[in-house]
Length: 93
Image 1 (spheres, rainbow, N blue to C red):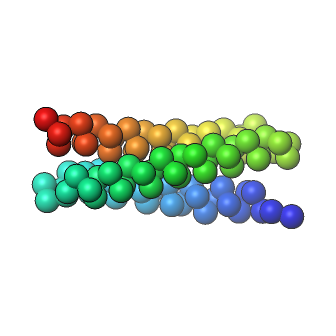
Image 2 (cartoon, helix red, strand yellow):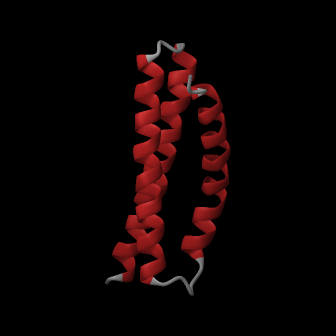
């Protein structure tokens, strides 16, 4: 059986780290457009994974606080991806 709670905990730790690192990366004046595109794609992939994790937690009947934590993780990755998209937009002006 899959340890969904363990996966959520691991992904939350990764999300916390990304919340600290991504703004630093995007603020770096030497970051290239290619690097920002790659970062955006990775963040979108993580947001998709977090969405699937949320659905799995719901499917297997986990408690509301667990599902809320997964939803917050999904939102965090979506927000980080949006910040990367905004950086790309400003770089292309």
